Image (spheres, rainbow, N blue to C red):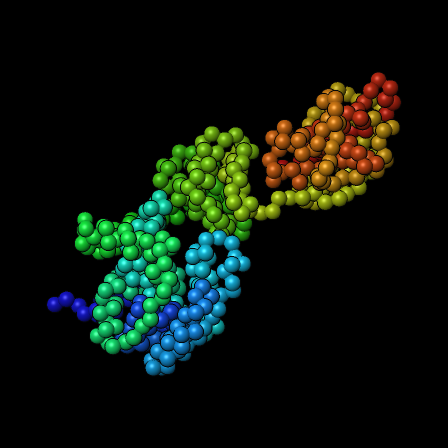
Length: 454
C-alpha cells in the first residue's frame, strides 16, 4: 500500500537525516502554499522539535507585505509557535542580480534568527517542482554536474523536507487540512526566469513527457549522487597536493597537476580557489585560464581572477592567493651601510670602492659617489615616478618600465626604489638611473647591492 503524503514527508526527513528529534528549527514562512504546508507539517508530524517561524521582508512588494505578515502571524498563533519578522535593507543599495542578492540576504536573516534562538536547523519549503525548475534554469545557463544536481535536500544547517513532494500534492494537502494560504503576486511576473520556466517552458515539455517534473527530479538526484562521489575523489586528491595552506593562500604541488585528468583538475582548482575566497565570481573561463597556466606558463607567470585573487606558477608549486600585495615602507640608508627591508626580508647594502668593475647585474650596480647624497631614501613606487634608465637615453615612466620588464602587477609595490635628493637612483633588482652612472671622470664609486631572501 502506497505511503500517504505525510508518511512520505516523514520518510524523506529520516532518509536524508534532516532531523533526529530534540532540535530547535527555524522554518521560513512567507504565507505561500509551500511554506504554509511545511510549517503545518512540522507542527503535526510528531518530530519532537521546537519550531520558530520567520518571515523575511525583502521590501519588494510593499503593498502586500503587511497583509502577508498579518496572515503568517495569525497562522503561527493558531499553531502555537513563535513568529518573528526580519527586514532586509534596501536591495537597491546592493550590487548584483536582484533575485540572487535577495536570496543571499534572505539566508543571512535565517542564520541570524537561528543564532538568536539557538536553532540547530533551518527548514526551507523547496519542493520537487522547484528542483525541476532549478535544473532547467542551470541547464539553460550551461551549468556542469553541480548545477544539474538541482537543489540539495540538505546543505549544512539547511533542510528541505518537501523536496520530494510536488506542488500539486502540497496544495491537495492544504485543501484536505482546510489550511488557507496566500499567493505571491511576483510568481506571475514573467521578467523572472524561474517564472518563465515554470509557466512557459515546463508546459511545453509536458507535451513530450507528462511526468517531466518527476523525470527532472530523478535526473537531479542521479547527478547529485554522482557529483558527490566525484567531489569525494577531488577531496582525497586535494589533500595529497597541498604543500602549504593559510587563511588566504594555498600552495599545491605543481607536477601532479600537469598530468591530472581535466574532469578532476577543474573541480580541484575551483575547490582550491574557494578555499582562499568563497565570495568570488569565478567562472569556467577562469578555471580554463589556470589550466593553461599550469600546462604552458613559465615559472612566475600569473593569472588574475576576480576579488584580487592571483594564481602564480612557481618552480614546483601553484600558488593561489588573495593576500594583499606586499608594499615597501620608507627607509633611510647611509653610505656605506646595510639595511633589512622588513616587508620582504631583502637586504640592501652600500659600500664605497675606489674602482668600479664592469660586472654590474640586476642585483648590484656601481654608481658615481660624488653624485649621491650620503644618505639614500628607500621606498616603494608612487604614482608619477619616472627615471632615466641606464642605457635607454631618455626619461621613462616607472609604470611603463615595469610593463616592459613584465613585472607582475602584484609584485611592483614590493620593488625597492632608491632615491637621492628626490631623484630615482636605482630600481633595486632591475636598472640604475643613467644620471648617476660611473664615467671616466669618476674618482669614487658606490656599489649598491640587493640580497633577496631565499
